[in-house]
Length: 267
Length: 253
Ligand SMILES: Nc1ncnc2c1ncn2[C@@H]1O[C@H](COP(=O)(O)OP(=O)(O)O)[C@@H](O)[C@H]1O
Ligand SMILES: [Mg+2]
Image (tube, rainbow over all chains, first blue to last red):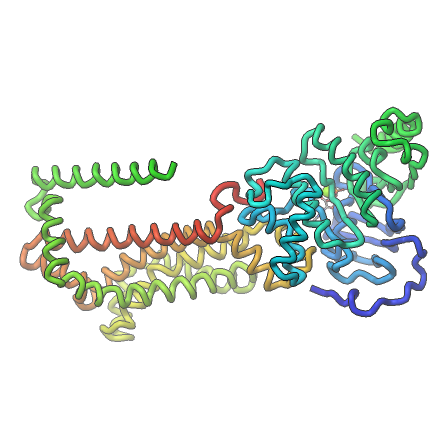
């Protein structure tokens, strides 16, 4: 894969210094389907930005373009001022369907990114085991994915992404395939991760409540061809502790406000 | 409980042999010996070494043909599965090969390659290879896209994607193809010895029939089946050892 962006750090010319990722005038068409049109967005460093929008509006497409897995039809993505030409060590992906290897143990799955980076076995298993513990799966190192619940599988996906220590975490509806209780726990854990790991999170969701609960910045995408219709920065309730967010008047207002602007696009 | 599976296998074998014994005693045909007669012929041939000598002969085209079919078949299958062009070019050949009436092709092979080892190896390959190629290529084509994408996003090279994702993901179907291919290879090896020149186990079958020693003939056939079953079990053990988590829950379901 192309790793050219890792070699020589290019001087960030026009990237705002506090943006870890910027997308510039991104368009993407699949044949006749125009998924994204002229989408520009800044992702502040160390913060969690949600991409919120109805199904099929191009959230996954944008995330994969940032990941370097898809090429945009036009436009550029910059990560730390360097133009993205393919996947790189500065980004790690958490997949909606987990994308675990069914023949590999939890430990090996969590160490997969390190394995591809050529980290020696003993060291990568050490580091993977550390993050398996971090996501609350100690004791399951030698289990296989089919022996785990959906929520536990996504924890493995998260451990895999954390283990490579990338600066940017790309998460594509990571909690959509887990049950409601598990999802709430995940959302709390995610808030702690954002606070403790000095990383930039780009988080795709179609849930308004989830976006408002976890985000520093919410980009609302409208259906095809998708563009950013609004950027919302919930700030008032961040410091009040995970238990109080859902009761906070600002939280409830923002949820209502987003629903008011999205409802006309939902048939 | 693994012993349960073994017990069931023994039970079904016992049922089969019982039916064989009864059919032989009725008798279904004067040319159909009982199980016990066949077994005593088998032990006689093992005892005097004639079976061992026969197998030394038969195993040559069989082993060579099966190894070539497995290596080449999986290789071509991967290639065909990974490339649209080669799929278009090669798949029809193997589909035709699989459907070809082999007995009719054997005279042509003999004409071209004589009656030696080459022709026999080719017969084994024609029997064994198509199913290995076709299974491998279809398994490779069905690798879940998200797993390949995952590997790429974690900086796997194209080779690593193939070796660490595509091949293991395809392995259950590849192994199923290998099992079918190996069984077909056994049939091919015996067919070659019956149709080209009677050597090895094929010679025992032909010769025993000509002198109406039917127990020996069935003993030879039985030994081939036994060998094939043992070999298939070995393959299964290899598969289990290599890809443990694949046994249940294929794909991240
Ligand atoms: N590989 C593809 N080929 C053709 N169309 C696609 C492909 N991937 C996505 N699309 C289309 O692009 C649009 C955006 O898809 P996606 O990014 O998956 O949306 P979201 O993640 O917001 O649900 C959808 O209408 C989808 O049908
Ligand atoms: Mg999506």
